[in-house]
Image (cartoon, rainbow, N blue to C red; front, side, top):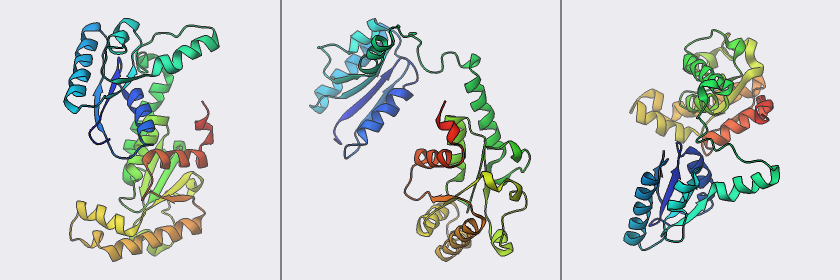
Length: 274
């Protein structure tokens, strides 16, 4: 596996091919070399990729794995044919064509998921959510929290910002995030700006050892990064969330995707149905 190369070839951004391919590759040990080739929308471009696949096969002595999402059949056939020296996994032939038969209609042949973004309400909602999350990152603003879908709370560097942005970018969720700091623990209650919105709050915690490592990369040798300080903050934050009845999970061993899905399932299950 480490010596294998995986190609993600698409006439769009390649995000669909890569996401799907990586979810399958995750079932196997080791990490192959990844090569994304987006915007392959002509026979000429496809021929260059086909030549690259063949060259890699010859150099490595093993077939590259090729995840393919190409709409145009003429372009697709340049790569997906018996002469190709890669193992080609064509997502459209595997999934779209059986669905054409099942639905009794032909696909739209639209290239990429972003082709008509300017006319998509969903796309504009995501942009609005991203702007909201950026404006409400790390407690920068308490304005308009009444329209937030989710407010993430937790100690500094527990994963609130990346999770907020992922929720906004992937799900159109207006996610604010607010750090819990020693002054909050001394008071023994949530910051007053959050109290009216407690039902929207979701907590993130993290192992103290991992937190100290992350903070040390940011501010080495500081009290902020000291292990004992991290242990104290994590204990106090978890105690506060238990007291306030706020659901929470540890980000230590979970991906952003897992964290976001758990939050949606807990606070906004309606966003899992669309």
